[in-house]
Every structure is written in structure tokens, then in C-alpha cells.
Amino acid sequence: MRDQEPAPHRPADRPAGRLTTRETAELLGVKPETVYAYVSRGLLSSRREPGGRASTFESKEVEALARRNRREAAGSPGAGGDLSVRTRITLIERDRYYFRGVDATELAARHSYEEVAEWLWTGRPAPGTTFTAPTATVDVARRAVGALSEHASPVDRLRVAAIAAAAEDPLRFDLSEASVLNTARVLIPTLVDALPPARHGHRDEGPLARRLWARLTGRPADEASLRVLDTALALLADHDLAASTLAVRVAASARAHAYAAVSAGLGVLEGPLHGAASGLAHRLLLDVLDQGTAVPVIADELRAGRRVPGLGHRLYTGEDPRARVLFDLLEQVPHAEPALLAARDVVATTARHTPLHANVDLALAVFTASHGMPATAGETIFAVARTAGWIAHALEEYGERPLRMRPSGHYVGPRPPQPLPE
Image (cartoon, rainbow, N blue to C red; front, side):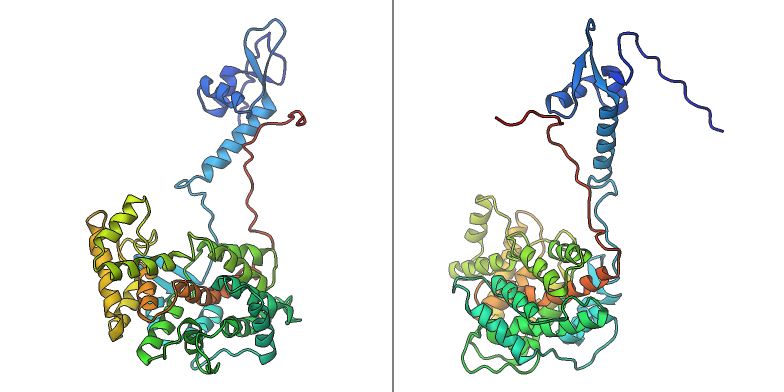
């Protein structure tokens, strides 16, 4: 039996259940001055006993603050408390990334986007697979998208298309693997086919990349450029727990159906810190092409206190492997050479300030700028591609305990009771 610690001596002028400033500081592991700072911030309440000169503190309130401080310390960066989710889908390490243990860049180089999506979902090869959607579902989604303002963003249109497709699916609440897979195989082509085509006379047939091409540019497609687009879709299909993917898993944890989970991902993707990066890089390249050199363009970015878009990635110390694959393919597209040279100029010019490598957003910008696509085209490619990964994560989350994605809040506001506002 473990020896019990002796009860601390309680000064005669301090009631039971109350702590002195020194005791409070020791329990919290802080200096006495910090205790009074807690009082001024409303985190602790103090009082002076009749006839006493020093403040005392309620022991239960102090213990609660100590527990909260320990939780916050455990959740701080580098303390091992960062949100971690078990997954079998994507691994990123040593400047490479893998889909279910297979090198993702090699997978994308040898397989179509649809085949890579099936691998993410099932872990089984699916040679020659293509995605098609029922005409009735596509028609409903097109009407819903067509009702939007002409100023609607591509992600606006994709979200509306997803909602319209969900309303047409009476089985959307069936979260069995077979049902969710059927949803995925219909939803992705619906998202693409619901977007307005850039040129008339296009027929929605063939691989997804060819159908998406017609939504991004009115120029005819050549095989080399289509290969770049299809490979980009496959490379972007997943990338571990990006912000949008975490939103999808939270929705799936609450047992939202797959359409709603994808809608959650699309909502986060529209944030300027996530999905818009390729558009910023696209505009940067156009400025460089217009100026003939990256020097004044980079200078303007840095003078304005902005990061140079298309450079650096917190998960890779070297070049983004996705960018490397796309740059190699773009070298086989003759009319991509000016934008490729502009991108290299951006990297070289910025290296004088800080050594950053190109990321996938810069490679996407080279592709979109070379084919007369709008600046938003990269965001569209990203959203369509990532839907495959979102479905994979939703499927994985449906197999976990419901509502497990529920972190605890750490209240740091004024301690109750507070007076009612006047």
C-alpha cells in the first residue's frame, strides 16, 4: 500500500476549501505574479477573508484551471497532442507520397484517374474503368447549376451540382460500402458534366479527363495535353488530411451521406488558403509572361508582404513530387514552353530571397495558362480530383465509431458567474 502524503498545513486565517496565493501558484506551476494575472483576465476569482491581508482562492476552481492548462499543454504543437487520425489511404514521407502503399506518382503515370480512384476506394485494380452518370441525374444537376449567377465560382457550381444529385438519390442515406461506391461513381461524372462547356457541340463521352477538358477551355484537346490533365487528376486525388479532407471526415463521423460529406470538403476548398493557390500562381505567371521577366513581379509580391504563390510546401523539403511529374509531362507539350520558362524564372528569382521549390500549384498554373484556361481552372481540376480522396476518407470514417471527431473546447473567457449585460 502506498504511503499517503501528509495533509498540507492550513493557516489559521484561511477557511477550508481555500488556497493561499503561494499554494495556488505551486498547484498551477506558475509564479505568484501569474496568479494575479489570471485574476485580472477573469480565469480565477479571489477574495480576502475578514481580518486577513492576503487573497485566497477556491481550491476547486484552481484545480479546474490546472487541468485545463495541462490539456492545453498536451495539445500544443510539438507536444504530441496534434489531431491524429488513423488511415490506410495516403502516406507522406521523405518527399514522396503513397496511395495504399503504392508510390502515387508511379500509379498516376500508369493509370487513369478513374483507375486511381478505384484503388483509393477498394485497394483493388480496376483496369479500363470509366465513370458515367444517369442522364436524369445530370439533367437535374445542370438545371440547378444553370440557375446560378454568371459570376458563380466553379466551386459554387460543383457544390450545387452535388446537392442536386443528392436530392435525386433516394438511397443516399445508405452508408454501406457498396452503396457509397455507387454514389461515388455517379457523383464524380455528374460534377463534371453539370459544368457549362467552354465550346458548343461537345459530347459527354469517353474518359473523365476529356469531358473535363471541354469545361476548361474552348481549344481542341491534343493527346499530350489530355495526358497532363488526366495525370494531374490522379496525382491530386488525395494528400492525407488536408483541411478539406478533415472536414469530410468530420461530416462522415456524424454519419452525413457521401454527397453531404463532399459538400463539406468543397466548402472548405473555397477558402483562399486552400483551393485558390493555383489561381494565384496562374495570375503570377501571366504577369511574368507580360513583363518578360519575373524580377519586377516577384519584387511587387514581396514588397506587398505576400508569399510568392506556387512555391514551397510544408510537407516536402524538396520539390513537390506532383509538380515534378507534371513539369516532365508539360515539357512534351510544345505550346507550354513559354509558361514553363516563366515558372523556372519565378523559382530562380525567388531563390535569391529564399530557397523554395515549386509545388503542384505552380505546375497546374503552367498547364492552365498554356491552354487559354481561366485562372479558376486549377481550382476546378483540384476539386474534381480530390472528390475521389474525399470519398475514400468518408468510407474509412463510416467504419469508425460515430461522432469520434469531437474535440473538447478549452474555454478561456471570463469565469462565471458574470452579471447580466445592461
